[in-house]
Image 1 (tube, rainbow, N blue to C red):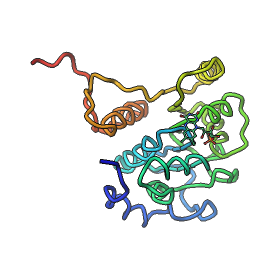
Image 2: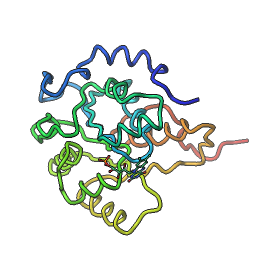
Image 3: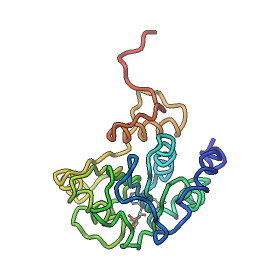
Image 4: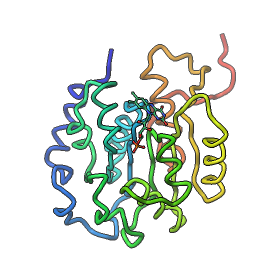
Length: 223
Ligand SMILES: Cc1cc2nc3c(=O)[nH]c(=O)nc-3n(C[C@H](O)[C@H](O)[C@H](O)COP(=O)(O)O)c2cc1C
């Protein structure tokens, strides 16, 4: 069964009443967060469902989310899932246009607890690697690195060229965490959703958040 917006109807109802529906200019929240605040960026690599599930998990964990989607993320959301980009934006507390360089997350003075780029394309990885901030995603990621905040890149491509590997090594040296969405087969997944939930859970582990949506390795199971 494909994951669909209908399955998240409770979340959606809450989201519709949340500030996510307002544009950046309407941002009226505090610049010092009252609850944990995470920036989520979605780019045009395959795996849009991972970004959607990260947003759903963070909503359930009562984390304030600030979402930026690239043009190609919107295209893959439409192609790969039953969501419309507007449904995805409604899962976040706030969402911004990727060209809006004046959005709060563009500044280090806007305090956050980190950022997840999920999925992260090789193009956005390259932009982050060289500090070329021509959209809000690469700018917000640049802010994370300069402010020494957590930056997790769910970098997705296969196979990897020397350029991809070099970019990954250098952003790691600059403080980012490369988290390729590589499945753990020992969970014996029955569905694609099981695989996605495991990756999402392990990404959020990096922020000390427990989705409780996947089985952790606990030694060999007794037959
Ligand atoms: C269906 C589809 C799947 C794609 N998958 C990947 C991928 O897995 N990794 C990647 O680096 N680029 C992938 N691309 C190419 C990116 O979308 C493209 O490089 C785009 O410019 C990325 O821009 P963005 O990072 O601003 O979203 C894919 C494109 C399409 C249409």
